[in-house]
Image (cartoon, helix red, strand yellow):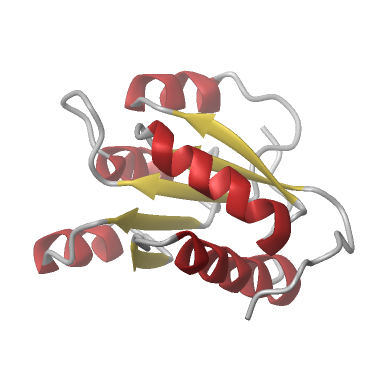
Length: 149
């Protein structure tokens, strides 16, 4: 059972690349109780994500959540590749999430430097549990580098 989590520390900016508004809404609603420190920077296209990253100054996101399937020709894997080859933001931890359990996607994501590959949950409760797990590891347990742009 998920219980309300009071924010216990600083805000935690997360770049979310997702083009499905219903998924964005679920993530934002579920995070209110499961990961209250999260500040989602929602970007819906590959092109907007590149523009956002290229124009950052100062502190950036602490974590990136990337959907594989986007509208358009570019994918979340394409953005992952751009992130991981860039000296500017290659240290950003990246989680790939998708509805597919295609082994080709899974292998490719890890080859490109993904820190995790997660199948998207179906229910609101599953989203809350996933966000709580992400919070427990990436916010409370892992020590992340300060990344400045």
